[in-house]
Image 1 (tube, rainbow, N blue to C red):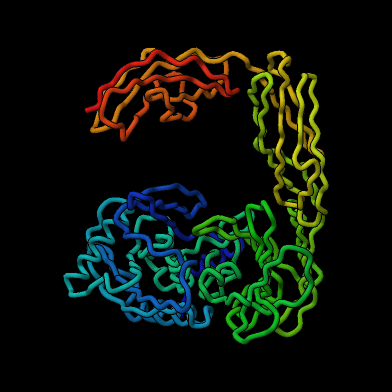
Image 2: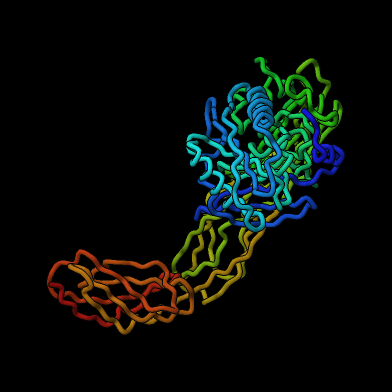
Length: 549
């Protein structure tokens, strides 16, 4: 295929290639969030409606997936499309389609048609939605049904948009700018976005991972997908992935390997509490990986992928030659590449102990009446790395108040990255003075201070009760809030002396309103009382009579 001047420029800039496209995802209103990646490396967000409904997330697909793509050649009155139908057919429906079938081992295939050119108004600026609407309308006028296709790729004339291609992530449409319609890497990249893939990045550059088509395009060579994207595309079987949660040494098969081996193709390393998982694979430079740049060939790749649903940007952290080691200081993970044989590499995974302080959760101030007790459940979070040993823990409590404490269980064990819980019982004798009293809770290398408030004063009674029958057998009772020194006052509604409703803690800035339903006909008396956080109960309010028909 002839290299265009733009492709030649991209090849020269391979060490620091410009961003290629803008991506988009849909919000709940149907508009798409479009990230504009300018050729100078800047970006901005836009929301565009009219690009079609999102497709199902690619990760949800199972088995083989075949899709039909409609390549729509678009022209303006003063600007023809730059690709002939023959060129579009060869680039998209032969080069890209054949490559996709090979790298997914036949599990992701596509065919389709090339139509046009259709002349549409140029309009103002970079109006993707209007161009799409007009081009599809012109296709329908020619008897073509765009809805018979899964994807629409618009081959535009040179347009005033600073990208080589644009794509709606997990959506139907993509746009190719000017001469890039002849670039198979650009077309595959944009289809990857349609399939639900985001960029293949490095820590310093969003498009820096050139071992994958979702990195920056480079010349005319098509590349295979890295480990995480291969899984997303459905080209990796479950038995070809080994889940690693501790030390491990052994072979892995080349990612570009179409024959079965006992060794897995991908190691997926997940550690508790880590925001990301690590994917380890061997890129042997054979089969469809033969076009890999030399810095990735016959090396062990280590990628990170966020632990989050939906499309995710992947990051290449290391490409290891034999004897080289990648280390992650946060988790203590070490990945070492050993000598490779044929289409296998020996990979060692180990974890150093990365100790971190324990953290306590659910420690809150406590309100308690003299002579009463309260209980709270406290969670211990262990943030140690996988390589650390479990901890044996004995929580201790100190205070200068006349309070009693019990811990259940008195001792417990927490494993690295896991949680453990215990109950803390606080008891106040009848003679305990009113607080607040500071209490220090110590759990190994973590401690927290909370207050125990001894509260013997009940809230004031509710006042200004009113009631209406607002529906058949339904009464709404309202009153003014009570006064209490502490927070979280709740209320009980009584009908004829029996509690029929208890509220959640009520906002003291607004009146209380409670509905009593399924009330029997007759005259009933309603009253209310308040209960504070310590359990002190107010006197019952004055009552009112309500006649229910």
